[in-house]
Length: 129
Length: 129
Image (cartoon, rainbow over all chains, first blue to last red; front, side, top):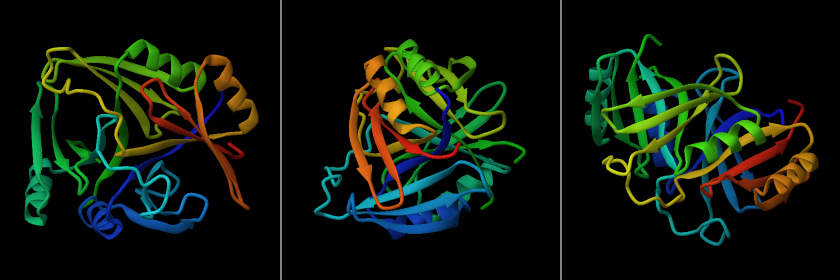
């Protein structure tokens, strides 16, 4: 079947807190904020660059049937972002109060994980972009 | 901070089963299969089109410290894919034994969710692409 991968939707417990993490720390742009009555949910779409695959933040009302008990879980292993200066990025994470949970070094590359406000692992990998 | 969103990494419990779902059902292309000794993990990268953001399947050895008990969780709300023919896609899911868990209709659009082999929700949305 032919499909087109559009975006990854993550669930957030506090929309403002997550918008701050993904826009101020990771530098993404907030594109839309929409309300979906069918799911009693709010959706904020973030995109890194025009036309690219982006990230959708999903928040559900207390009485939405999708507002199941939140467990970050293992399904989403991590979201990966390239950064030019990994050490600088990790310092900035620390300054903003985001926890660096892991650093990995192989012969070829170096990366680290920072927790987002809901405990999801965000990989930062040193790269040209 | 300037970053570039590279990909979403999901954790899978059975690599072959997940490769089948993402390539045969969703039509993605398998790009690389690599081994990372630092995490005792296997990684298969899938990309929909050259240069686009893709999906990484992560499998960890039994004795990897990342092989924590698997709970799909709420962190990953869904991965979204555009399809030309939603009804045809849902029939195909049924034929291949994948469960359709939800259908949503609003005035403007129509979409549905299919479970991947680990229980993650895959959104299929009717679109031109």
